[in-house]
Length: 54
Length: 317
Image 1 (cartoon, rainbow over the protein chains, first blue to last red):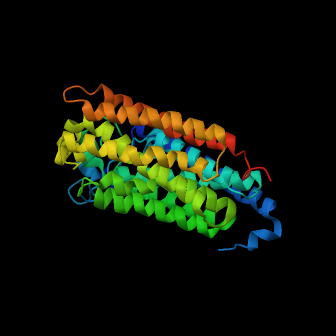
Image 2 (image 1 turned 180 degrees about the vertical axis):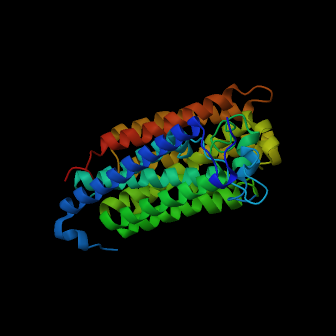
Image 3 (image 1 turned 30 degrees about the vertical axis):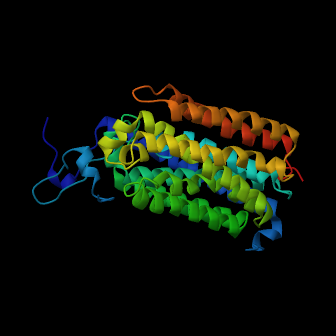
């Protein structure tokens, strides 16, 4: 097995790849939930979404 | 302590060649990031905020109420992550906190900081956009108070750290009330005061039997710097204020008889435990352990009965 070229940067181990993949999936779910929340809340508020009393 | 570069201390050597140094890729799991948000603390925050929101004299669309609680929960999670980012050195010294993701080296302080700031930004802006800016402002102030005033300043510098810092944990019912009504009044301030005066007996009871931990970490908790007896006396004094304060919502007509009776009985138990702590001497710590456990039940019962007693006015219009 040859040593990876330094110019290739870091070569992830399998454990690191799995951890990165699980984090990426969690971020995707969180973003999808945020989009859904904004969509539903916009429907709930209707035109009132633009009226934001301080 | 550096927030950004301190991680290398915990994660071992940095990979890389002579010219370029690469940061070691993270092995942090999703569970580590959930742990950063202190889920148990978050659950108490969400519960007290729910009570503040539900007992407020205003109606709210259930989805708006859900959004408000979600934002408050995420804001509490942001506070936890920011706290862990800064306190990694202290957490590593204490048995109770040494398994947290940052001292264990699974998450770097800089990553926890970025996570906390991101959550804080999203929670405050979303609360402001969809609920109101008063509650969003209170949430932002609470995060700032916990992360900066308590964690960075008070915690390492004064034995009054958890007294003043306790305000951060007392804000959620006020935020819930403000989310429902868009304003503040005496009732949410009373709920704030109950949690504020509950915090010292709760944490000093823990500090009494964990004082070696705090001393090792260099945290100037009251039993560590002022001595055992001073802490026992202060626990009794704060409980003497807390017990009548717990009954006040009933006396002032904000809560019903069920709440009043619950507050009287549980307040009496709190006082009894505080007297037991006052009479107890080291190495005995049974009373302190009982106070720590019962104080959680005390706060939960007060707020749960208030929720049941006053109905769900803020949630169902």
